[in-house]
Length: 280
Image (cartoon, one colour):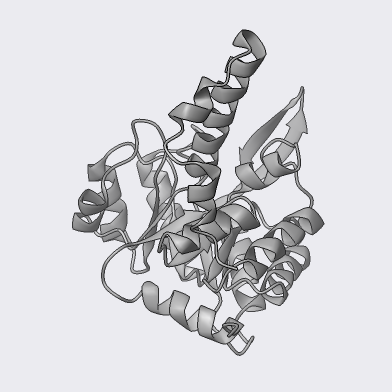
């Protein structure tokens, strides 16, 4: 029996209210989504990096239409609640930002994030400029307003991306998170916090659940450590996708360079084992 969007949304909301962290497991396609559900995770997230790579592009290279199609495929593959990484909202104006989050809800999502950066592509790479805090807060408010009268709870996660972009201090990050909370964000997020003391300081400064981004080298901590400092949700960003692609690269390099297939014998799980986690 299919689970309704209302039921998924209520489940997602309740996960944020249970008083302990939960894992938002980031998938990159329908197959990985089914595996993660089969392994017992309680909610699914997307990753802009992984989503763009699926289309053969760099992070922030997808169009809004591509991101929505990608999210729809993941939503349709699972009974779990799905929250999408919608980058900076895919719009220059507040009306365009609002339309992005209305479309997100229409695709079956029950949550989505919004970043406080303005991406631009040049010299073969994506550059990120930090938005002024007031402009960023207005964009958060537009996303929130667009999703408040849907008939089900839709959780907007506001991201302060200055630390991960090397363009902000911890104090600036906290000020931004507080502004986004005042703008109506349901969940707050700041990738790249350097240590547990910083995570604790952020959690103590806000009144909404804080999403910690795991999977960043030397900036990831255990579930119990994060629970102890007040984290409400732990997302895996592109780390699972990175692990999968790392295994692909290592295996393909063996074939290309050595003409051997030893990787087949060394895999921790065979395809048939993995397929067992998928639901029909």
